[in-house]
Image (tube, rainbow, N blue to C red; front, side, top):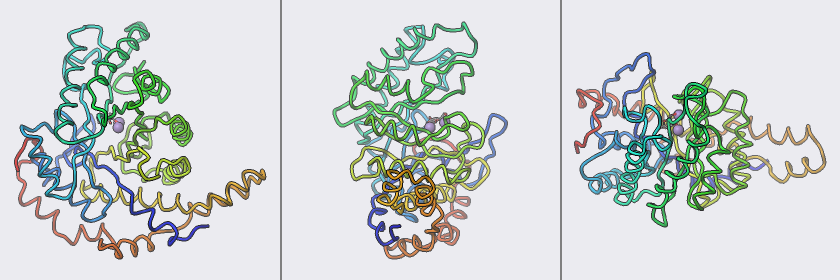
Length: 388
Ligand code: PSV
Ligand code: MN
Ligand code: MN
């Protein structure tokens, strides 16, 4: 097996984008538990994200969600992010909170509504031009609840046409990242339910359309690492939305529910070149912290990804390939599991200390007093306006 020393340099290029919405109040359809100290402004969300980066060195960018994070002056927001030591990342579209989208957005049968959804996405590209963002992330709530409610094929045709209009607006350096999800909010038929559908639309659009794999968006038991392999093979794995799920789209801390699955996914990312320099696979979190503290929740999350990445990098690929070729089933499995069972936490602590980072970022956060400070300072939180 490789030693930690062999992989130490590879760990330095890890970058995991944080979602702005992880710092705001969140909950389920039953209840949102407001937490004291949550950001009142987009600027404060960036400050919290920057704290995570300061403690871990792993989170240099922040994804925004429009309109939640709309501000008057995105240029100023971009400068503010840079002052904090982070940058603005993926722009997420939102076509799921407007009454007009009750029966769909990019798939809507009413041309007025469909044009409105397309215009929203064009506005998001305008924002990207100012923020310097590369990726436009499109996740759609579109779908139907009852058989017969919609013509599934017509909906696909309208979707293809709408996406083409959005794609046409992108600059040469920008990408459309299409996210799939097998159900919810639609319960019968979702219009982008699986990687195959996302892939088919991306191929029709062009090279700069890629798929986002949200780890929580699959049926229980789905072999997600196979999807990783296939999309990498096809050159269309654009991004991960990492989170954990026990049941559905739980959006819990990545690596919390099934660390072994995270390891298997990251191993295929590494083996398939998705972790190589300039691979084009974006690592992002898509999580909510409903009952736990949000900033340390994000710290824990990026550390979990780092830990499993280290273990995935430790797999002895030569020994594995040899055992695979020789039909040595148990030998191959042993090579794989050896890496998974390697506890890298002490090595990672040392690695951090050697790079001027806190050896234990969770403890460093507790000791920093930042949590107490924001509770004292931020009264009346969770308005997503500009307040720097
Ligand atoms: C809805 O399922 C969702 O969680 C998608 O995963 C998006 O990425 C996210 O919301 C933000 O729009
Ligand atoms: Mn997602
Ligand atoms: Mn989701």
